[in-house]
Length: 418
Image (cartoon, rainbow, N blue to C red; front, side, top):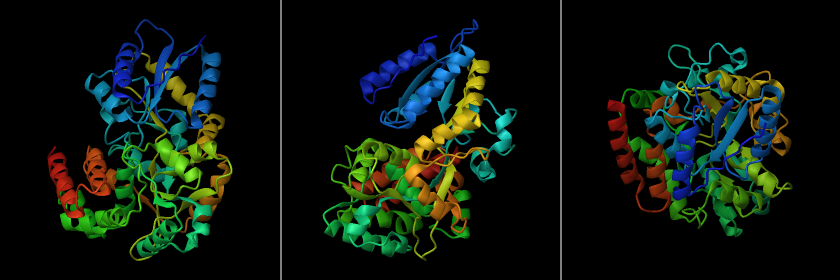
């Protein structure tokens, strides 16, 4: 049986067309037809694409169920929002870190699936609701640091292991720029600005300050001074890639792979796999996130490659069968390995290739804490786009750190009230 793979183009016109197409096929039909739709938050150049295509072929050969795969990054979240509003979601879709806070009302609980017993307990805080329900299969457990091109750092005279404070990081940026290389690559066409703020915020506040956020009290001064001031300083000193506004995640991956940039503050699975596809010899990896007091940390939680089943799916049994297939250890290992990421399942061991050294050095020993993504724990649901927009305004120089923090407070107050 032939497999249909529809690529959602990253343009507004084609995005609208793809929505119309998905609207016709999402959920399949209720006449027992064996076809499901599968939507991923993924770039066209991701090395995981070929792995998913291979797995879809195997699944169809085994079950006779066709899988129509679509993928996008630029328009993915907007498309999903439109489909949520119409209650016409793909049968299986990427929850990209938001299975509980954003999508749980639209997803079927997966507690009864056999693989749930193997979900890493470290994901319980972010992937289970107050009643213990889990709504997505975590093929990817994001344990993130700052992505680096180690050869660029060495050429600039920077010791990656010595970056423990934000002052150390700023010194490294200065040296990299002096060597003629872009210090930080970021993308104005993706969520990388939000990732940047999230990374910094995850260990920027005391327990009492975190509690204030949880209680609905957004401290503008604290957010400005502890988070956005760093971004404003990097903007002022010219540390971002000149093509930031037009750059995509693929552009970030290319710049890091080819030694045109030193650092990227996004999860490794977002770009490093693509970077290695562009340049298999790139000496890349990640280092822990620094802090003001020198206590390094990583940031972790539900990864982009986590998948839920639409509650309203008319092909729910087939969709659940496909998710169970992806959870099989051999299949889950292939996906995680292609992403250069840990799996969210404890019975899965992936070959992370060149990235294994970073995981073995910083994650496996367990000596550096992994902090949860700040927005998923301490900020109200729905604020992610505002985090992206306000941080972006600082990167482009359109807002000061104080003004951007004020703008974020407005959104915080509105969303918290809901």
